[in-house]
Image (tube, rainbow over all chains, first blue to last red):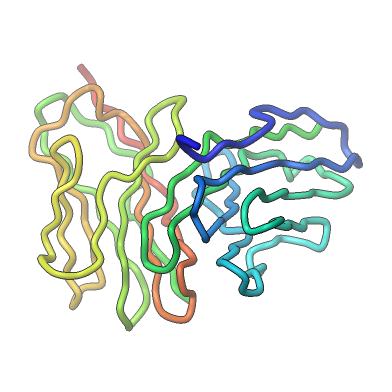
Length: 113
Length: 114
């Protein structure tokens, strides 16, 4: 595709519900990242996939957060039992691999009410 | 673990003024360095990058950055800003054992007054 695509662009959910956020990376990109951007905060690293290697999950804030990447392409970030502090913009990025620039999607704005 | 710090959270300046945004990182090995920009309502996009070679790199829209290894710095500069440079600017680094994981600084919001 032309760029990294994320869906939905906006999501409002009730506290305690589960949500799934989707990321379609640029075709052929082997690396995929998830970041979280909260109001007034920088970009917080969540998880990183590189090819067939085990993902780097070191940034996931709790066991309510998980992500998978199917077939080396599309990725889904799942947040279980959402809390109000989960409200943020969730950004996905992809790249060709090691030591290359990352391209970002528009993000999913998650609001937990 | 690698970390990135940006010295200014907010910068306000007038058109035609010069801009310099500080960025320091903590990692002793080989690094790749980036500046990303996020214009209001838009997604993050790459402004410039440094992988190797000339430590003075030129980016889009008249921006440049200088990598000073001894100071662990990668400061962003523009000699004369425009109103359209109003945005949030993020410094990022990936290095060493972290592989291709990009670590970002906290960002600097720049407001250019017309």
